[in-house]
Image 1: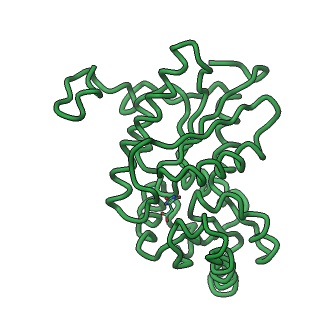
Image 2 (image 1 turned 135 degrees about the vertical axis):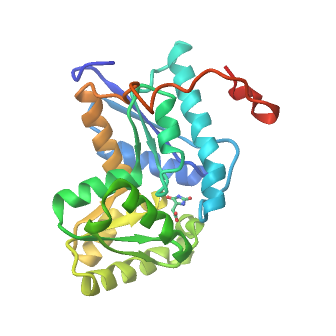
Length: 256
Ligand code: 5HY
């Protein structure tokens, strides 16, 4: 593990396969990274172009694991070692399984945003894309122990890929929903519920007038803190490397 004086390399993984969204996530992460922090962004070759359901989530999780394995191989094949990973989808797909595959910290953007929101407000709301994905965020809030901090998970009712289409006025709908949250939820901050919103934080903050917590940038800063503190994923207990075993059929490449 590198000490705080050296550079560090943070790999952002967009679990969907839309390259333009991956590029946008990379730019947003690099913009807040400290001097000396290299940020790279990838997405799986195979999987859903956007994640908007439990099914999409389940399939995308394997893509995330493939990207972690790729990052780990790069480090051993003489490439740039990855010091921390960020899963840049608001469902944090495959988070715990990903942590089993590396000693580096692995941070989900939902978990990161929840942590930071509770440091600056006693109550926050989440504004995500489609209504049907709200339950995914609600399950994460319960799972991570933040449910009592979150007043409401709201949806702007926009398909994820509208965020890639300037003509779709996704920003206007997100701002409207944030304004409703501000007046109705009794909150002090808003968490943006999609990695594809990573470039919208400033515009939304100006339009709504509340602290806006965005997951990709939150995760990059938390990753830097963990690496600087020489804190990696514990290999003692449930996040130890998976036991070697055979995988059959199309998953035989996962065997060891
Ligand atoms: C995300 N989907 O962050 C989630 C957002 C959502 O493709 N990237 C996606 O709506 O759950």
